[in-house]
Image (cartoon, rainbow, N blue to C red; front, side):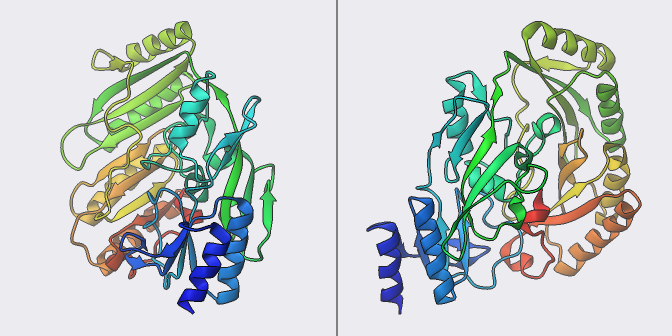
Length: 375
């Protein structure tokens, strides 16, 4: 059985591109049986059809940056690696067609040569187009441009029947979270590169002060590309605003915000070191909170009370979507109690909380976010 399955995968993907899994080929602490690396959408579809015929459990993998997020798989027979689904074409107009295994960084570098960009900045290091879209992973630029899914005109994917499909979803947006299969390519909107980028940052120590600074920035109608917050568990944090556009306009808008924020505002041409980075690692239990920006302080204080101490918080203060790192050493029951407590606070505020990441052993005992819930 093992030999015939491997032979069949090699027939589809080519010699050297299907193999028994190694120790690094894991999802949520569970090692896969095999890894297949198809080079085309047709090969990806054939791989999925074979897996369906053999009753195999399958996970897709891009760079692997988010592979341990969400619920660990009950079984894992086959990883479909999208690394050979790589490249970009039809990128001379308002959109670009990009293969799912292409890294976002590679696409941005290629487009920058023509003075353009994708208005996306997923925080995961080495994120691929497919991985970004699969969980709709948004970075700071989502404040102005919307999530990656909202910027996708169409996606292509392979499904378990062996078919290659296209989806433009409802209202012109791909229903990516509902797709059952492996993303193979996407048509994404392209934006001009801004002439100037400038960040204004102001030190902050409390959630209430964060809300005040965000309210002041929004009231100025500066058309910011992002408004982010970094609030460590202890010590001072910061609120930062990104302004983009032609140099004269950015200079004027930056001066206006600096006047409102006062002499403590720091104006620079480079992002703060924490900008566009997650505040958590693989060993952390992390929740994602989504709520109206004005309600974020109340929810943050409630989370601190439930945990018994301040928690590290980072994310989009302008959109009210942040990640918080819970204290180490919590049991699954205690994590559940904290999440339930925050849910009660969020209930009247039309917000939500999900557990994004946890060590595999703990994640198996928790109600983790599904891909459609992550972003």
